[in-house]
Amino acid sequence: MSLAALTRLQLGLAALKADHLERRRLLLDGAQGAHVTINGQRVISFCSNDYLGLAADPALVQAAHAALDQCGVGAGAAHLITGHHRFHHDFEAAFAHFVGKPAALLFSTGYMANIGVLTALCDRHSEVFADKLNHASLVDAAKLSGATFTRFRHHDLAQLEGQLERSTAPEKIIVSDLVFSMDGDIAPVDALLDLAERYDAWLYLDDAHGFGVLGDGRGGMTERARASDRVIYLATLGKAAGVSGAAVAAHASAIDWLLQTARPYVYTTASPPLLAACLLESLRQIEAGEVRRAALRGHILQLREGLASLKIGTLMPSDTPIQPQMIGSQADAIQLSHSLLQRGLLVPAIRTPTVPVNMARLRITLSAAHCTDDVAQLIEALHDVV
Ligand SMILES: *Cc1c(COP(=O)(O)O)cnc(C)c1O
Image 1 (cartoon, rainbow, N blue to C red):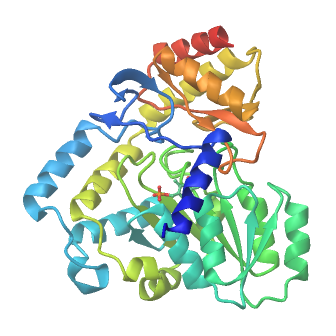
Image 2: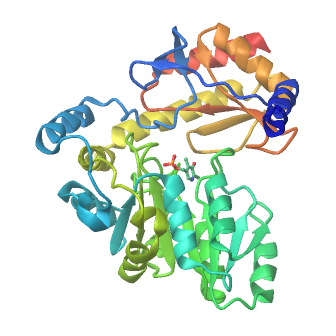
């Protein structure tokens, strides 16, 4: 007898293909950067989150070589057994100091950190208040935590306040992307903090796309958020920091609680210590990264000016390296992405389920590693293919 469940998977795959929702991986050779080799073709990439061009930076590569010689490859055990290396430890201290929080904890990925934080802070008596456009990992984390999961419309603080007012949960936590990953806009941090204070809630800010990039590199936290015991801050380290992992920074007791109870921290092998050594170097580069950030800001302005008159879709309002051109139709977005690729420009079409149906878009991301000519080529090609 055949396996009926397998047939259901095959029908499901066929349906994805028919709806233009089938995903294919691009095959990268060589290093990540502004110019990459994808499926054997040399292209200019406008789709990585390597916003500062640190992923293949010589100083980080050098740090990796040096650490490799000192400590080998594998961590060998979880942090609470014997896997907690001095490099991890030093990075946590340096990170906490840099972002202006008392303590920090290093997770292997941002996804794991989000699951870890919300499941450690919440139980079924808690209530999570989440912006509807939050990253998938925050949605999964809230669900897994067992807390009541309440979502508010994107940036709708009046709706959030009503929800907080009605809540009888003893523990409340407001959760938001700091820079929204598919839209590029920024959360109103101080207004969220006002509400967190008024209703005695935690405020958890996921700054995956702001850390390294916004302000002086310390990300999108405001001075008030930095000083507040109720703010828990997450930076992922595989994006602008160019490496891998994620760091959570907060009050020392909150961090100690995570260390004791966050299951994706406790029950997993520590990341290779050489990655933490790279992160220490990355932090130095970010601190001294004003030249890179100025280049990035220049590219953002250049792109926005160049695409203002484009005859299809609209460029969404964004001051961050995430510059989505809203197209609408999935088929159109995919067609544009294909045409750009034929010209050697890699720009992904983002569609459902990552974004709502009929809000398909070209998600252009810029990097300090681009040069002015790269951005000019993209602008010209987009006007041409339209
Ligand atoms: C990328 C991302 C994550 C996940 O981080 P990883 O380190 O890639 O697992 C979490 N939150 C947001 C907003 C992200 O964009």
